Image (cartoon, rainbow, N blue to C red; front, side, top):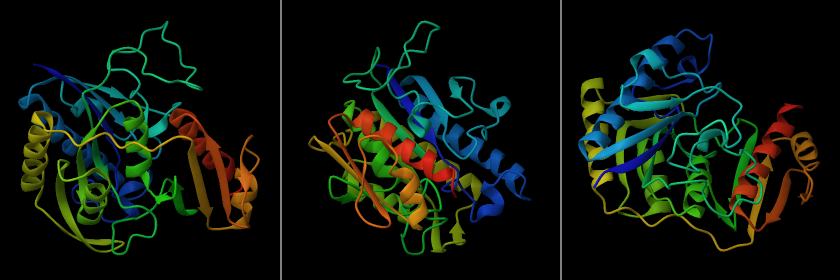
Length: 295
């Protein structure tokens, strides 16, 4: 039986990357990081294909979201590049069928995917949530967020993105990154999650990295196992969905609280409660976009 795999690829957890010189366009190591990211993604694609996948979409999910070198991407994968995108890091998760010119893009209030469902999602090159000790470039979405809680549980990008996938019935089967990111993912998603630890963080900007040949082997083999299953249970929360975001400065909370339906809890925290996880994800994006106008 063939399977469809959705890949969301970030950059901080990619093999060999240890600081912002790699992850920031215009910095000295950014061109190298683009190739490193492309190669890690290819390893995940190769493993998925070896495991029986035949429909693979890669969503470039870091920064400007046009980091992956399409000329070097595996020919059996499609690339979703550029931004902004309605669902940002999770754009493409709604359907395993390629978008057509007539596919609606109004996601608000959505209760089911548009078209066929992905069998599983892979998170490649992910990182620990904001405040994780000794994790490579730990953060949640931006550097101005201190903490995020979904229904009382602290989450980072791994948790928020897995919750959106889980709302649609899609399990996250593979996470690659440093040891702290992979441990966070296992705590959230369970023992059936496959992980590929490509570096051991010793500080925010330092890690013991696997050699690149070995790192790609680890990713490829983990991706193969992930497709074969068993999959972890999709990450789900009981509605209504209550999102609380803590900001580093009060002005960011002030801006985010202009989101309709939200409430400012105190100087740094803004909350919103909705009955649909897709709407929560869109509200989360709105919070960040508004805070970005004053950051």
